[in-house]
Image (spheres, rainbow, N blue to C red):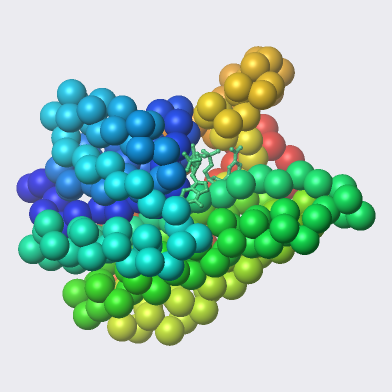
Length: 244
Ligand SMILES: NC(=O)c1ccc[n+]([C@@H]2O[C@H](COP(=O)([O-])OP(=O)(O)OC[C@H]3O[C@@H](n4cnc5c(N)ncnc54)[C@H](OP(=O)(O)O)[C@@H]3O)[C@@H](O)[C@H]2O)c1
């Protein structure tokens, strides 16, 4: 039976990226997918690709650091659909790499706004609409969610903060029927972001040495489908050959 409730994915960019993969996976279930990111042309291209596969996606230009735009995104979904979202995935991220003493305040603040504040805004607006019906709200993390590293002060602070937003939401809203998931992506994603900068990386890492965005999206979808007697809160994913 096709999914009747809509799905919202915030932080959708390249077709070969995790946000787009989550959109495609959700659309394959029959759900209408709202794909949100800052670049409308890329979102529209994705919506056309999903339509060509028999699915339905709506492109909504949204800057997740802007409170009014996040609220407008969820108002739009609510106006279109007769029921609240069944899954909201917060996927926006900007891996800032900057030596500590050279990091300008504005760079640190921007990393936090995209990595953490945006997650809070999306999580709050989603929860307001999904209670008491229930559903899943997920947040994409990274290796930096758990540990800081040289030149990663801004990014790690943002991702660690996002993890605490997710954990606090899970403890408060789980008992009210919302499945809150923090998905820790511990390795390089074989997507446009990394491979456009390091075209040889996939070959260097060897077969399946990078995370396939479609495989991550499948893992998230399976967690979303879990019965509530056995919910995963934190999911950590890495390639088989990654040391940790
Ligand atoms: N790439 C990796 O190797 C890797 C590794 C571990 C974890 N992660 C995490 O995985 C997630 C997805 O990474 P990805 O590399 O596959 O990227 P992606 O899903 O292809 O794209 C995420 C998109 O979020 C959008 N975005 C950025 N700032 C935004 C904002 N303020 N408002 C709305 N959208 C915004 C960007 O598109 P626009 O610029 O068009 O808005 C970006 O392309 C991120 O949270 C990242 O931190 C990535």
